[in-house]
Image 1 (tube, one colour):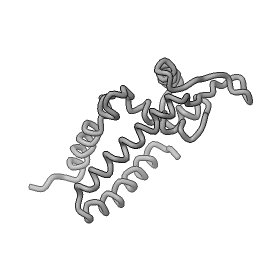
Image 2: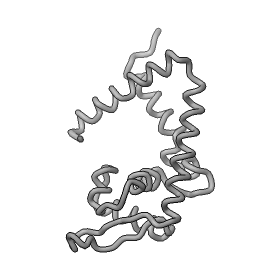
Image 3: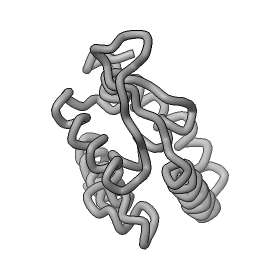
Image 4: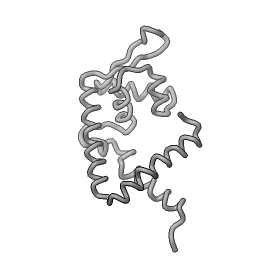
Length: 147
């Protein structure tokens, strides 16, 4: 009996997140100790400094969670924060030199990992992913009312 589409999706999503290392910082870049949230934040900040609420909006995290995330990255020496000169009510977050290096290291490692995974797929499977994954993200975005 063929599996139902929702069963296939559930198993695929579970396997995807477990193997992607969402819950294990050592799986993002071995030896770096960056969580997935830190990795995503570093990637976002690599494009330029931002205020904490922008980072929170990008990551989909609550204000207090973003504050703890930034505090942890500050302790690791990856970011600095200070008052936004344009609006003193906001904390501006900027990558440090070590933070930029960590962001580059993460981006390179993830790119190489994705290239290996894609190389293991047939052209048809690659095409199916190119169509299916963006469609799934679009459906998820619509359900949660995000941009």
